[in-house]
View (spheres, rainbow over the protein chains, first blue to last red):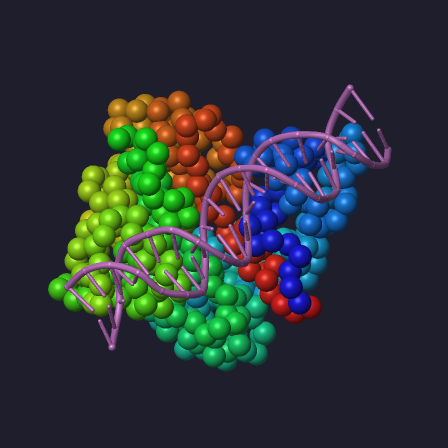
Length: 207
Length: 207
DNA sequence: GCGTGTGAACATCTTCACAGCA
DNA sequence: TGCTGTGAAGATGTTCACACGC
């Protein structure tokens, strides 16, 4: 089935949702207001929201509660997704203890590390498991999303284990381009890429 | 001056560079190979590289060394950029100790935290400073990029200090949409946004 | 009157397809 | 022959502008 929500719209929905979660229940919000808060053109906000259905009232705006509900529904946040975080260093720990996960539809169902010193110890309330058990655990626990927070040189191996265990979505924080088979979706989050994009614009504007 | 490199191309250049840095000096690479490794169509690779100039050889490919040099030049990596990292929790620590920074054109010129327990202590070889000194230090040290790794509720205040101190580029890891004046560029990196995008696609494909 | 919802115009990005040159 | 560089076609995304309904 083809998605009726355009690719470009998808990453803006979590942004709108974040803003709506800060708004009191029972209030209204206009595309103009939401646009200013999100840093997005008001027409774009309306187009984005129109893909979810017609939930606005002409002359008035959108009901905050209803809009939150509809965005959550479109994003599949009605169901709980299980995460496996691989790598219990500073980054993995930051991710595992990230408050925005629990209660927002994501549960950390496993935290793995290669360092025997770390294995068995609790990190953010979760017991660290040896990375050798990743594949089996991911399959048994029906992990939905694998989060890779290991050094670049170990990342491909971890990705291979995840894929072999049937995981079809990977969030990769390691600075490498992972090779995965068709049907597996990878999102890359890379500090140096972000800095380089910022640097590019600074560089350009200083010429 | 208008940028001759399209917006969409910019974030792919760091990706190409990362791949090229793994290749031996003195070798050649074709757009096809680079495309497979980057997960990008070969024609797109060639278009992207053509914005930097004509550095390929027909029938052969690109010289790895030269391409690395040209991408670095286009990204402004010829100059060193100074970072201030705000927030010395797990995330801030992970960022401050990230190996990919030093020697890649980025220097952590300040690490700040609000917690008096953390101030003064060295984190990843850097002494943590009180966040109250952020503004003055950022201005004096001519910080180029501010990295926000504080909780959501403190992020806007930190952003305001950075902007007041003349910082024009911000990398925001806090899950909020920052309000900044025109001319200040913000890039958002948000775990829940990434997870929600992955969740959306899982959700869609399971229908 | 006011803000949504949306066709249509415009802008940007991607992919194709092939000429041109080593 | 093989791969780059690039016009042109096609796809996607954004913005405008206004009809519509509260």
